[in-house]
Image (cartoon, rainbow, N blue to C red):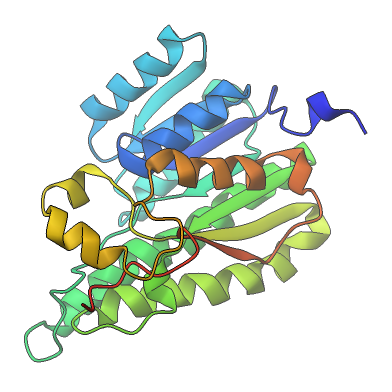
Length: 259
């Protein structure tokens, strides 16, 4: 065992969707810090370029590519541009996700809204896996990391579209691990708990935070870097015999709002 090689990502290329901010940005920075060439993919190209520049200014190797994951031509373009720039793809972080958590009452939403959540969270993830797999097979190394959520196993009101889409991510991850395993491609997923991203900060109050931490043994909310650490583990050689797994990063508990 050579300890220095366990987390060495030099010579490997990583695509991170939704990489401009939050967990995506922290993942880009983490992977770059351990030697990966990183493609910061985001629908907000200017913000993606800013994140990419920050990585490069610290000595990393990164480019930004705009991508709306709900459009197939954008997914194809993302993979094609990555191959043109770096010549290989070894790591994919399917980080993009969305939904109306707490705003998905079946009495109020339309079926088209439900469909859009699945298009963003499930269909785009599956399609990108399909697009990168041949390149990973050729490279002889592949790690696909899908972003799930604690919502995939919790039960809460007005979140049925988002929660069921993340549950689909869990089972899809386990099944794709069987499909791609023979080609030395690992497929795993991460289920974050409540993470102190900009989106959460806009609604967070001291009272809300206290309620969320009532059933959390490690008595703090997560940080984006906490999730990026799990991304690094799955991306790196240290997890070379780990596939089809969903790891929940949640401080040991559930950040629910019951008082």
